[in-house]
Image 1: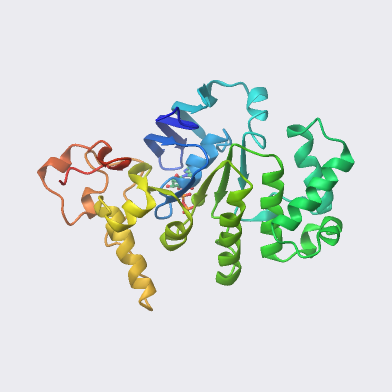
Image 2: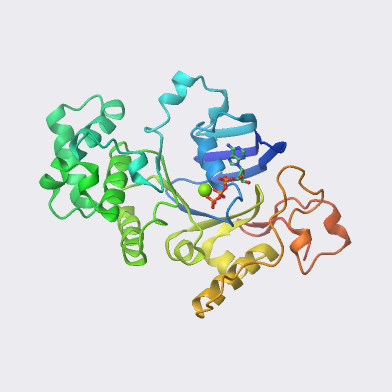
Length: 320
Ligand code: ATP
Ligand code: MG
């Protein structure tokens, strides 16, 4: 297989927490190929956002340590200077956040946002060319009246329209990787479905890789070519969506799928996996899922590596 677009090797991230050192990511290793839509799933606190922020080197101020390698087309992002990283952020890697208002400046119109987004990545274009691209992009992301959309201020847009504007802004920079971190979670289900349909429709125009971070296995199954399942700061399973959803290899993935099926069956109570997510301050040794696992056995006292089960389908589990 050709060199992956992004290769993450042994990425560990820790923070200084009030109660001690928080090991938010532990030795995450992952290859991400060009032009794929990758779903990243896992319970709250599993490290999904930390992984996304690490790729952008935007980890919060109480970061203690970020080690390993993040190779974007062979260049280790962890070795770049801050100035070099500014050439990566919003150009090679762009991110759409859950709350678009946090990334849109209320005093500027959509036009200003969309033109500014292009200035760094497309210095070859004139302002009127950038304006024209912005209009075309607004039409592509489904803004009904693009000229009016350009004149609008962020607060004049509905949540769904803001999210579309954010997607337009990110795509105008033609990033190699577009990260959507729970980008649809704040929207109601109808709008969420529309945004997911939009991301799928954009595939014909946008050749980059999309990292789609979500709580919803259903959305990931629908949208993504591949899925990465995270648990307590580690990758427990990864592979083609079809294979992972049809034949999950890790007990945690199976448990997540069962919860989702219960929800679909109309369970009125909050369905969750029995047991608690382990503390990331003093994580237990051995397999990190073992304390909650119904199938654990003595071998689980040693942490299993990610083992390839079938082509491209890996699971960190000792079970055959
Ligand atoms: P969610 O689904 O709720 O968004 P997530 O999978 O994105 O969760 P992260 O936000 O990456 O999870 O957090 C991973 C772990 O790291 C959590 O236990 C969280 O409490 C901890 N963490 C994240 N940021 C910090 C920080 N700045 N200081 C201390 N701990 C942190
Ligand atoms: Mg998160």
